[in-house]
Length: 182
Ligand code: HQG
Image (cartoon, rainbow, N blue to C red; front, side):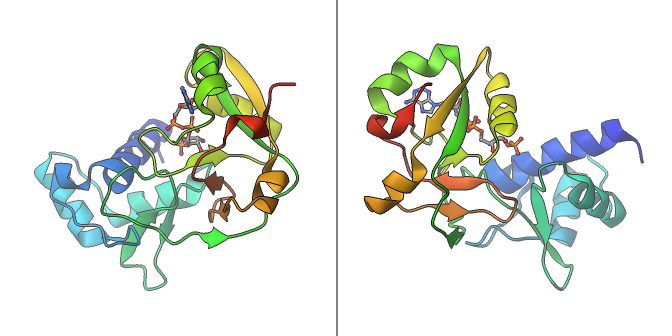
């Protein structure tokens, strides 16, 4: 299948399933699930032609495993990255490894040094177990910089961590004493 169409569809699905379901009149339940038929119908009203085969291909080919299908195959959701208030996805709480990584852009550093890492529009701060992934994430916003997070020490001090289905680590915030720039 056409990779450009897959990428466009993936971006569209991220937009409606994480941020703006109402843009196509779609309802997400509190766990983020959307009925696929309603998604296709809503997209069609917006002039976008989707079908079940295309959606399934986007789900299975997503490099970051951004989406998942329900067991009955009737619903789809974004695995993480939500900003919409109506979704409160129950991620699996887990003890993190000693260190996790966050990639950001150099222009955000000054503010991060003052406030620590905050979720911005999303529900959580996103952290990665792999350095390369974190650097790629930071690159989206400019010259990347890698931050090493003392995740285990945070956890020992009572901060909660979640491990999303696709391997991304999530936490509510990272205060400055746990952020290393080395
Ligand atoms: C920065 C992608 C100033 C933060 C990726 C980041 C990820 C601050 C930006 C997922 C700050 C938020 C999420 C502070 C944090 N002052 N800037 N105090 N605290 N920031 O996109 O982590 O491709 O919401 O460093 O793979 O970049 O969409 O978060 O640069 O998993 O599937 O504020 O998005 O996945 O940006 O990326 P984002 P993120 P997808």
